[in-house]
Length: 277
Image (cartoon, rainbow, N blue to C red):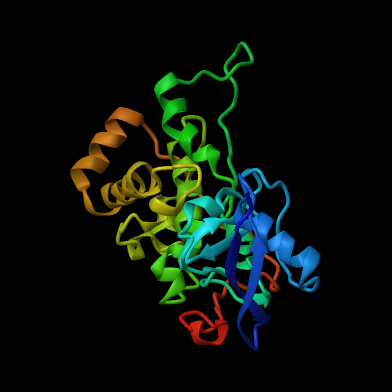
């Protein structure tokens, strides 16, 4: 037996908007993205939403559901309160393009600033050898689907608009490169000065919203911060590393970017999005 659900969906653009009320029939297994598609198909064909796989793999359908950053395709209607409207709004940390679609270009511009993986030469027999524990350490980070929910919930990006701060997703990427046993570039100066790892105060909100369950803070950002501190503020650790590991890695240099790749986070004010109405 089907029941009806009430949704309040943001409609608008960068100039402002409001929450519109809709009613849809639910069915077993229905997710929020299904409800949005029902609205598109039967009530509001101009409603804009970004999606692709509907299987929690592409990270396209990120939004805020009842104020919490989530994937719409992985949020079941049956898990939400039946006696309250379901509020669906765009990610608050990024500018709105239309309705539930945000401009996440900041993230792609930030990715281009990170020097890519540069492996050491192969062994004499043509292979690369790594310890299993080194592989296991970074394997978790490779589950990232780049939904940017961690970026959305990060208060440094959301509230303080720190355009120079990489954000959790890219600190994890930097940690992956720094912990990779084959990589030959030292990006720690960049992590400290260019990507501002010191602005992260490890509240773990990014880990809480990650749909892949990545321990972003505990396994990635905190070890990365520790490595940066060891490099810049602990002479004993620096000396031990030189004795144990030999010559330092080559210092990484940020790629030369096109001038159009501006890394600003000019989010639309919350009041204009109809949130909290």
